[in-house]
Image (cartoon, rainbow over all chains, first blue to last red; front, side, top):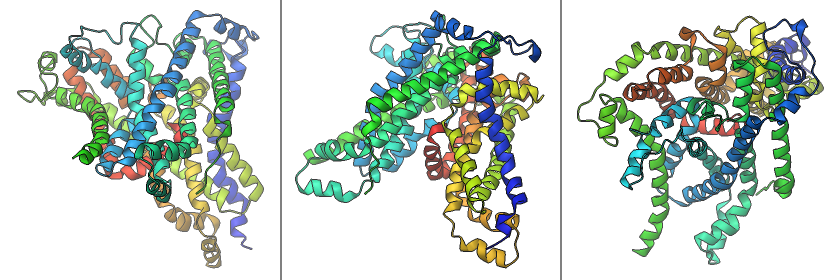
Length: 296
Length: 276
């Protein structure tokens, strides 16, 4: 046996910095959030002046219309990605897997937006949505559609954000699903082709059932992403017009940092956590339960 | 003929998608060399009649994009490098040293970190940074960036180190190397392929980060590029040509890195799924 690899001093020295950071940025925040969610601390006053107020923050949040607007917008995020984005993701990944030419180009280009800053993409799309000189209204004017104030009209503001978000992330998920499709052994499809299955039949009867586990992962990631969406909203509308595009995370930040209601903000953080858990559980129970890992 | 047509249909859709992705970038690129909003409004789609490169100069110097750019570069680099150092030390201790039980408990704990939604953690991190007295300094970003990246980095590096054959250390121990010697001289060099992957992914996510950067720094000269860009947009709302030049500055480094290392980036970013 070698002694060198059993040296406890080295082990501790090597492990300690990462463990400290982990405690600071993952464990401490959870307990701190929980603790302050039961107080009315403003984030600045001396810590010994903290007042414990029970579940007041939670009842206040749940009784507030603006909070439920934020919850509803998070729900839009989820519904939009599950019912509109996921089908698009599946169709396009099947298409890319199917074509022989230009595969590399499609992959490269489609993935690109997902490695860019959401803030910068928000700015870029703010320009596209600009009513007077923006790209979108210019294109629509060809079809005789008049000026639309995409980001300042509350009928369109949320939709505009969702489209931008989809534009940034769809490609990322397509690449994930594509990787799963390409890992399916060629023989399966070839055998089906010999038996006379058309490309459409092979896609729906063979490939699709085999990639349901990864689609499930995509849905879970979309839910997680939807629940923590914040920067895109801050950059594009800052929650406006009149709070109509506020999401839970921006609502939390607005109270905790901008209006010094730190305790209340933390109760929102706890609610985000709980809601994420609930949505994930519902999804697991309803849909994902029967998915098993497939080995070839 | 029919066969060719059938083969063309998927490409038709895919090229459509490609257009939707790439055209906004072209739109910004073209707008950045136009004179003003009027020039953009008159010819929104194509290249301008006369190229105006002044926007790039104005954005870089007057709008202080240069300052933001350098801040972003240095914060992203330092954080990504320190993350690699600390995470690889941890991964080495946990996967290669002989501390079976403690090691697997520590590793399991860090994995849980991947499940914690980090945006919801922003407020406690804010007070933590405040208590440490580093609010409004670059450390307010560097330390949280390192901390947040630890779980993902450990997962990738530990998996890689675990796959290295055990004989390596045995030989090294025979040669009289200590544990830290084995780490620095043998395991770390062998782990370089995985290190490159996590380094780029962490660098990019630091480069792009907005929330912490927006709320933890209030001094203009400290700002990072995404925050500076938003500030710039709010101030120069009316000058879209100059704003486009700003967007180009922030997007080009990412595209350049991507052009060289796209396989690694795609592999790394999709592996870190939960992070995205």
